[in-house]
Amino acid sequence: MISLEFLRSFRFFGYAVFDLVVSFVGFGLLAPLLSRMFLKIRVSIPKWNWLYLVLPIGILTHFIFGQMTLMTRQFFDLSGYWVLKVLILVLLVLGLRGVRIVERDNTKS
Image (cartoon, rainbow, N blue to C red):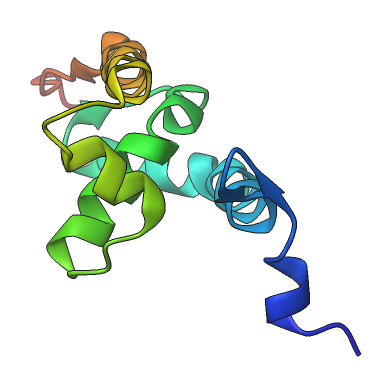
């Protein structure tokens, strides 16, 4: 049986490919459900925008729970890694670009 350590051993620029793929596939599968859930609180988030938000949400989640992964450490490092910081901020802007507040429908049928 393949262990999790073996799957995480494949790296691209120091980042575990398995973790990135699972994150994007997971958000891709959950995007329709997440969009419907946010519509209940009157926030419209297109399904594709969730894929842009994967890395920003991941960094924020790891920071909140104190799991300082390589990407989280690099993002909060004040002395460098500007390409990563710009990429994350661009992804955040692209992810929030299509978000809309849905007005309540006052017409009753």
